[in-house]
Length: 175
Ligand SMILES: [Zn+2]
Ligand SMILES: [Zn+2]
Image 1: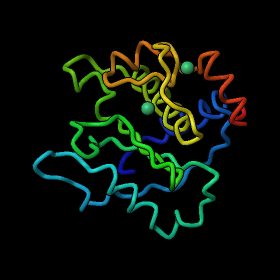
Image 2: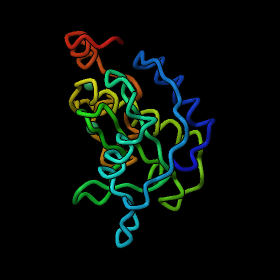
Image 3: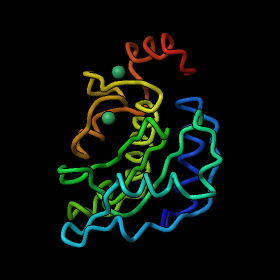
C-alpha cells in the first residue's frame, strides 16, 4: 500500500513460500485510504484500512482461504495501542504490516535495509501464523513470540519452534 518497493515485496514473497509454504501472488498497489489517517496521532488506523481494503472490488474476489497481506511504510495503530507493527483480521483472512517502526532511522540509528527486510519477514510470517490459527509462543526465539519492540523482533528467528511446528501439524498447516 502506498509506495513500497517491489524489491522488498519480491523478497517477502519468496521468503513466505519457503518459510510457511504459502504460495503468494502480488496484488497491485493500493492507495492508503486517507480517512484512516488520524491527524492528532499522525498515524493510520489499521482497522479502518483493513475494512476499507476488504471492500475494494479488486480484493473482493480473493479467496478467503488465501491470506491477504498488506504492507505499508506508514505508521499504524490499533484502538488505544500507541502503535502496532502488524494487525490481523482472521475473519477476513487479512493482515497489515507497517515498516515505519522497523527502520533503524525511526530510533535515530543508521539505515540498514537488510535488517528492515529481516524484521518484516518475521512480522509477516508471524501474522500469517495468526491467520492460520497459531497463538503467541513463549519461546523468545520462535517466530510466534509476541514482540512489542524491534529488539524482541531481532531476538526471534523467522522459523517456528518445535512446539509450534507440532501444533501446526495438528491444525493441518503445511510447514
Ligand atoms: Zn502476534
Ligand atoms: Zn513457538
